[in-house]
Length: 371
Image 1 (tube, one colour):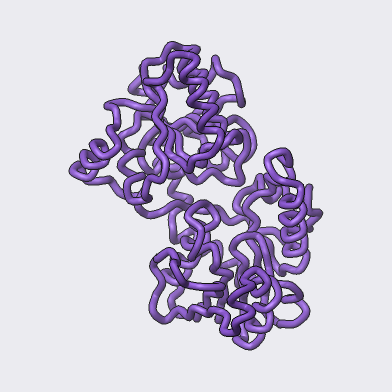
Image 2 (image 1 turned 120 degrees about the vertical axis):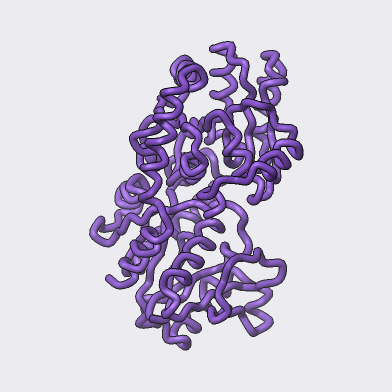
């Protein structure tokens, strides 16, 4: 087969959509090297480097107009190239497909929808952005031959909010970077601990520092239970970070809050593996990759009850209702004080995450392409 990908996010996005795009391309080219692959990107100048076999073709626009108006090229001009390149499959990795690709090509069209948070929580987005996101998602699902949802939660949302036939949707879970699958060497752990001045024991939270991630509830739980363990948050800085710091200052918790921005990926596994526990009280997620990263890192997880979280956290994690501060505080204390409980959660988590291993994800993706 000849398979094409919308690879813009793979080359230029450091967060969720970019990680998913890079992982999908790397897995399929690794486990199915006998297929031909084409990556479509508006540019490669300043692109993120990742593992791409030499035989994989990278296509960039050739005409000046398309180079200048990159979004226009992705939406309207790629269709012509899909036809010229005679693709068997074209996969929109970040929720969109090119305009009229279903009419002007014979290529099987696949689109991955990660979440519909912009519909569930419209207050988090500008009206114009909500409109654009909705139009792209709805149109892409309508013209796609198959729609990939990254969780059962996302599948349910696609059916409810975009009115897509459930028989057209395949749930294919994500994995996490292989760096989290391996035990970090002691020397690296020491190096990272010194670099970031990590305390001996700490609670960890990873993700964009924004209101939806609900990290404030962790600080409130620390205060409620008078817990003498600091919280380390790793993520991109936003205005919400100031809200956390203000709360810490007003409640004499300055020494209990450490925020690390712009941490490179290669340092993250060592930070995970030295944590006492991972606490992720997010209000809503499409999947929740940091939960997987924590379980692969062999640390216990406390996360939100309901939604997608039980899909990602399995039977091993501890689940707490959003903003139930007392219960969250007790869960943190229980893991801290009960070594047997902590080890059981870790062992069960290691067993559960095997379903997210690379070979299984690659196989599930290829099965969608072959439908």
